[in-house]
Length: 135
Image (cartoon, rainbow, N blue to C red; front, side, top):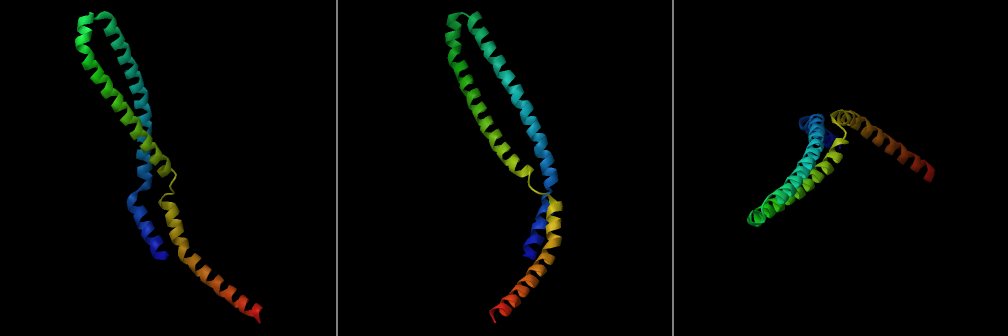
């Protein structure tokens, strides 16, 4: 058990969880800002396309319609992909942000040998008591 705690400590020492948590915090903030910006840009594009339909002659609109539909489809697909990726990131972020850091592992590593000794001593004492009670 002590070997596992030691390797866990070494892993977290190299992993630098605190730095990762800071980076994830910054990324989460940037994502929130970009979501707002994207929503505003999308609304602006909708307004521009409506204005285009109103001010452009019908024959030109018919020529451009397939191109606009392609752009609209691609924007919708990119928006969907972005939302799914952001949801996946936020799911991982929520789990990682609450992981105990290196200091918690250090405490556990320091306590593990004494806990193991205490467990062995308690087990031996319990065995002696069982032996006395059974006579």
